[in-house]
Image (tube, rainbow, N blue to C red; front, side, top):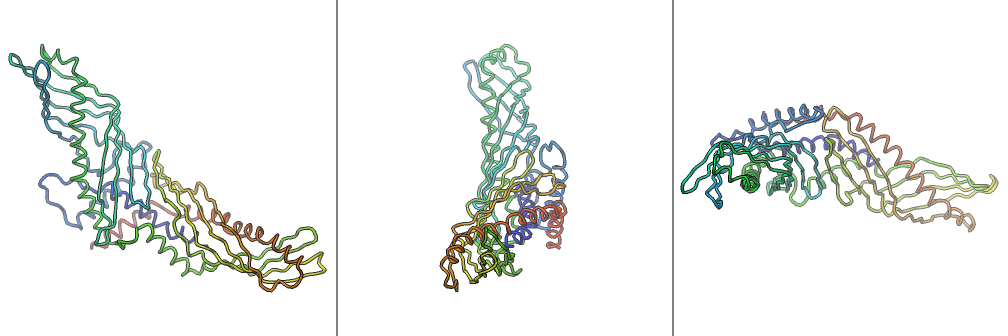
Length: 437
């Protein structure tokens, strides 16, 4: 059946997509300052090591940070200066500590739009440095400690197919917020004691200076390195077709190749009172016309990825033979054609980021559109035709649903249970490395 084979095809596809997501997250290698940019072979090896480290990292019950993430810790921020009523405050040699201790709280992606939204949190951030406050007659200086409590970052990355056919990140944006700010200044002296009423102002000054600097680092440094890694992938896509729709096109080709369009439904018999109806040679064609319906979404919460997908077909055509009998004494036969406006499958799957666990099918529902019959050779018994018209559509609908929904649920979970996600990702890593040799 077409969805079963699409699921089989997508087993490696999903693992590859997970791997590609890691590439985007890990995309900016920790290249600093005047370091020479490594060639493609070196970058692939670095990336492979990082992916394997991430797989191990998410086996922890409370994963903090991300191995290889391009976040300098500590990170220097620019000096800052502000005028107060009694003097000038200068904050210098400021370093942000703790940015690498983030947790990925949530994530969401509409694969059709190739956008990824992510929410990160850090319990405590410390900005350590020096301060000085001077007036015309006095000067005080010492160490400063600005503690940011409950930092939350919301980020968005957008991908598109570049002219050469490879994926390219076009924009990475980030917004930061904080729950509370605590400022501690050492050796405050007389002038410093006058700062007590301005500590909130100082905390806001530090945060407002840090925020655009971090966001600028994301867009100028990380964006370029993400694209360096994306260009290392051999897979390319046509500009006019998204990678997601290209995957569906490949799935349709596989369904036809494996002989599941047309698809044969098992023969069945139905008895109502003195009427008996035998339906045989039931064939349905058009299953290989499936395409995505609406959005295909990926979200993440509590270290688990949730995938929601809706797949539908175009109009299905079918035909069958029927034989109706009355009390076993009178019988007549005929053929009937039928059409179904569409078949739609809605599925929800979850996968723990601890890839030792198997994917799990949460829910699967099948919907059939409007059903119509076209009779051929029904005979001359009007009451027989009327009986068939009244009975057959619902029977065929039920039988098609029965032939697809329950076996599909069982088969999909069997396929998911057979997928070794960790092994598949490691195989993809090895293949990427071998392509560069």
